[in-house]
Length: 103
Image (cartoon, helix red, strand yellow):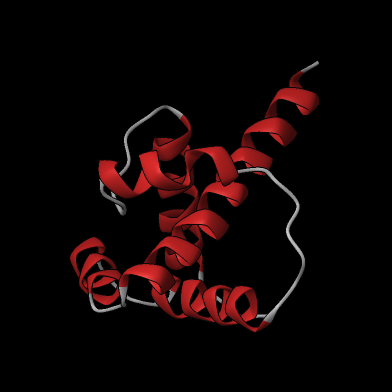
């Protein structure tokens, strides 16, 4: 678990909301297309997934959008896609929770 301040929390909420409506500020379209079929699927927990979750947490702690992008761009392609998949699973879960809450 990571601890974030209010500014970081607001920024994460903003990024998730933007992604939910199709404005993908962190990940490129090619990656999104490659991982699209795997978003939302349950996958067995392994070291790669745990590493991707840790890297996502590290990315969240970066202060600016450009530093978040730079952090992600420094990852190898497989790790970048793993982090993207975790991120979009969070986006999907957040959108589903909002929809369930509004009913």
